[in-house]
Image (cartoon, rainbow, N blue to C red; front, side, top):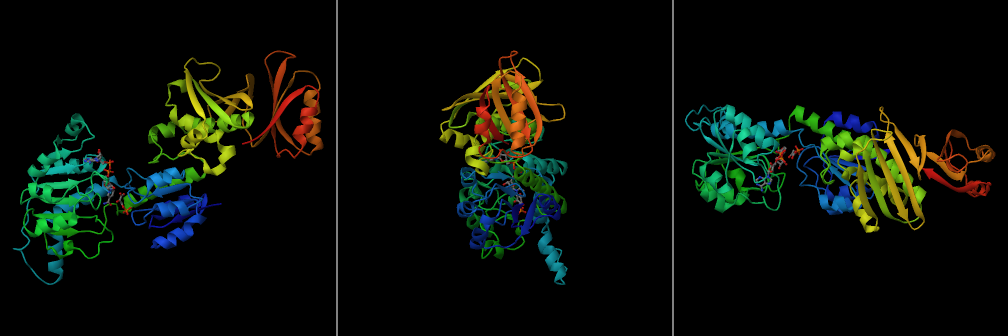
Length: 526
Ligand SMILES: NC(=O)C1=CN([C@@H]2O[C@H](COP(=O)(O)OP(=O)(O)OC[C@H]3O[C@@H](n4cnc5c(N)ncnc54)[C@H](O)[C@@H]3O)[C@@H](O)[C@H]2O)C=CC1
Ligand SMILES: O=C(O)C(=O)COP(=O)(O)O
């Protein structure tokens, strides 16, 4: 059974899903060296923002197939290192959107009305109605930096409160911003005009210290900043100075350059600074959402299926992936089959998408075919993340062709592998119920479901051969589950495909090849 390590606190709903397919160990608060010491035992790691998954952790995770981030930001994971090692990194892109957006709005209002300090003062026994006079957000300008999922929801709520909205996001169109009710402007204009600035961007080299002392100086003395995105987007030292000197009016922070926040000038500021301990995603609802979302993906990957929100498999949107999942399984099975028929070193794989499939995105299917093709060589080390890189490193060229005319099946996939031992081809399709059928082998029409142990022969179509093979297998105590023959012309060449209940014992293949009329025989294990 697979083993999953959960190293940050996640909702029980996620653990229950993982427990269906794996042994789950929950170990919170591990030190980096402790994590490195034990990670080698695990097939999957599930985290939130508390665990740093460094290159060292990844290199020590020799069996890791997947790292699941129960949340959005994967800046605590060395994603390039994971990709190099063939480890899928998944997150939950939408599970905590509302929670984070509502926290940002709550922080804006808390800061504006001094709620945290007023609350503390009442609890101390005071009744001070002068110190805590606040400011309204109605008719004020909110500058949203990053108009993605969270930024857009903040915009909707702020609009309902009567705020004027400016947005800076170089990757979205003016039309999209207008739809959301925001005027798209450049960052300079936004920081000069906004009364409130809220950050909703990822932390990247470009966004690190995006809000620095120079930017702070462009703001109005009445401006307040909210950061519920990532620590380090604001230069904390510069921010503390700007607030102390009255360059801006205040800030509300949920995230910090280093977490947990230790000694910091931010802590010595008064009611103009509101601090929360990275609580943006901490609602009951969001924690169930992200835990289920990510646990399902870990479960799928451990079962050999693709994940819907992998951040390191380029070009696969979750919707496309969901739609293509059955075809990816078809492609992977056919890749594995043709790889075993071809034997030796494959140099060229021709992937042909036929019928309905020809109109689909081919990249995931090619990746799946390569994963299947390389399985014999790499076993569990090959996956959707590294299949293309591994194929390239082995010098396997891929050619894609499309034929949108519909033949026997609505959509079918044809793979042809050429290597140092010759060329072999397989075709397959999906039935209405999603079952896979192999419909052609080396040009011979057949119709068989793939099975774990299979035997293929190429022989002369003549009486007696099938009986001889059956008796031979019987004498080795191998049970035949199903058998089918395909031929192009009567008494010409034919293929025989047998599904077996047991693996073929050593030496039997040599006996089969000796049977008169048999030209070739292959065993396949899928
Ligand atoms: N405090 C918390 O607990 C939580 C924090 N987050 C953080 O919130 C942030 C936003 O998350 P989502 O809205 O889900 O992401 P998203 O991917 O939907 O949106 C991010 C937006 O930022 C824009 N962007 C990227 N680089 C930019 C740049 N240099 N300047 C301006 N815009 C840029 C993108 O075009 C995109 O529209 C992330 O950093 C995430 O880690 C998310 C959930 C909870
Ligand atoms: O989803 C995110 O990006 C977050 O920052 C949430 O972090 P958390 O899961 O609460 O540690």
